[in-house]
Image (cartoon, rainbow over all chains, first blue to last red; front, top):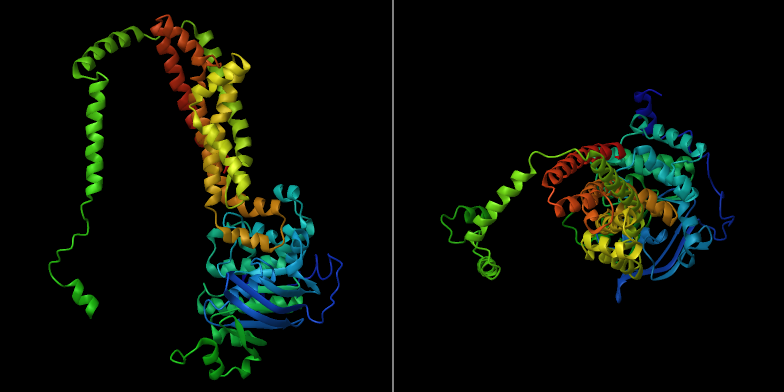
Length: 284
Length: 267
């Protein structure tokens, strides 16, 4: 592919090599019991006793589509997303991912669940001193023994897929660059590609565009939604930018003070709702 | 408006660099103590002048350097070099796990405290004292020197490595963890890349100082050129002493050159 074509295909999100390795049901052998891939029941989290950040969150995510979570800073959006793959330990409640309660899992089982949940971060969280292609392969670390990881001996299928995916996100010629030499937009593309490398069954994105300019933000959202569409998986995105969130959302969750105060399609979201979520209307 | 008018408000009596009386008092106390200590130790100007005389005579007997016993010299130097290289290699290999275990952000407190205790013990004594202990424990010769310098290397590299690990960005680690990687893989991909270049820096520095220390542990019988140097001192063979010292300087400079390049190769 020539660079111009790569750019074009990246913005359209065409990713031919997406669904090869791994894929649904490649591990665990546990099939879904609950109807939805993700169901959150009465989830509470408090970092300090008596000051809950999340208050009895109930949320079910269907098999497809973009769910956008909006809400003021400090209202627990990030905590909610991080509870799902237990980067943050929930205080109480259930999180059923493909029928298993993530909250109760032991270390090995938790790792197996994390392998199937891709995550995109606000500050990209690439390993700065590794090359772009090594960062992509980080997405396969859940499947590779330490010995092979140390020697950089990934399965050929993973390597081929990483290069294919890099082409799909339009960064093919940066494969051997160190991650810290990339621009913000390029880094986030790598971050998304790394998450997709996991062949995830769910994609979480914690403020994926907050560090980016408006144009790049749109490109990143386009890329992420296109790739998730290819994989046919649901996406949960935290976002500050209400306009951007609405534009890409199939469903909007409004949070305020640790509770869900709006849950519905983006078109039904009115200024009244936004007042409830963010409080006051001077900013509108 | 209020902000700009304050900035233009003419002369202000506020001094941005206020005098610190505790600091001034501290300096004065240090000065007083130095004067007092010199008087108790009989460090006087006359004593210094007399010392200069002896020094001149000593230097005179050191020239010209006498390289006639070059075989003995070379043998000692090679032994020192071997001690330094073996001790550095073993020290580096040991420092990696010990330093890692000592990092408080990676390990539970009881493990990191134990590792920290090991490091603290390694750092407690000067290499010469450690060398004396090992000479008593395992006998005269290079083995004692190697063990002494391994201890010194662990004390230095492991401590700084642990600090480097404690300063890493946890965001990068979090991202690797989120992919479902095992603990070992998180270390290999999330932690090590962030600290490897500093680890190499510490290691080459320690190789450098092991080269210097390896010429010294011989003085207490732990092998290397130091033993030869000490014997030459005791027999007042000052011309041979200067030959040894010149050779040591040459080796150290060569070592610095090589470790500088080694750093580039390994990074």
